[in-house]
Image 1 (spheres, helix red, strand yellow):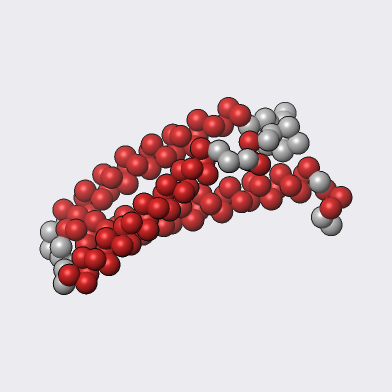
Image 2 (image 1 turned 135 degrees about the vertical axis):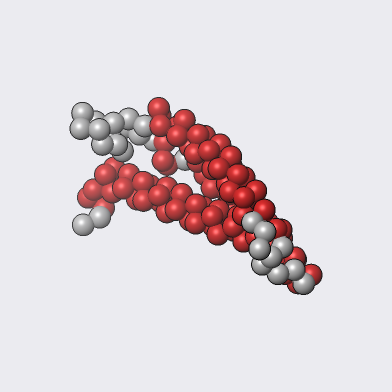
Length: 124
């Protein structure tokens, strides 16, 4: 069984993942931290408006959707798991759906923590 699709897909994941993670990590300088190193949500507005992080999550979600469509097209065409194209699309779909989901959940957790710290009397 040729592994060409998995290898190419792994290279693409490494490159895109590094670019996406670099863009997200570069925004860390906008985060205000207290003396213990925890995020001070009362002084950090970063999580409450649309940022590059949200754009990267959206791009990753669109890319995942396109990979699912590509996988569907080639499966309907009659290709099987031995096809490098099918291997590529399966790997991309699995990896980027997981990454997109985790990034989105992480962003939501930060937003909810920020809301809770900024308006503690509202939530008990």
